[in-house]
Length: 259
Image (cartoon, rainbow, N blue to C red; front, side, top):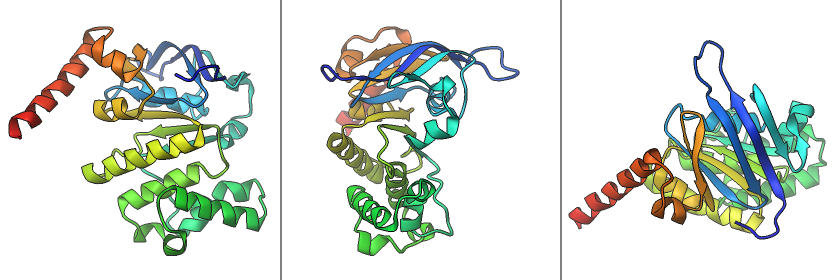
């Protein structure tokens, strides 16, 4: 955790229940996240991790509690303005197929009426940051890119207007194992150079522990443990977290047995 950093995101007793459900998808979650942290949110399907993320940029609104971004209660803010200040990357990428790579990255800057030179410079800068050569890729269309390259462009687009907060919802979930490891390393490098606050949702414990400065483990809508990867590995807070760590260790044993 970073010393003397400003609080970037605060969840205060946040709950969400979907219509017809007999339980809360997110159940009384309180977390404080400092500026510059890389927070991974780990949980199985239905644990509430994506719902929590989607409330952070007001794609969903909480039924109870408050979410504070840099001191501002987002429930009182215009949802569109909130979303334009936050980068958002998802597993499906969502690149526009009829637009080139350059046009895809430039979508939000154009909405904000940046001038052409500023947009062109930002597009080239972000393509390089994502580990791709601008002259080679900017004129291509999404269908001409591999899955990993599309994911990199999706990340570049999410970073286009220099947001202080980046939300990433299982962005590498559909990527093969080798490219996934490469993209994880790339994302760590990008985060380290930008000093932004990243929230990264995953169901992969290895990914969560590798990427996170702190990890929030969620189960049935609640946060079981919010701590550094080291502390979670050494001191699991409850039986659920312990079972996750045990499964991770079993995988290690399997590989050791093959070597």
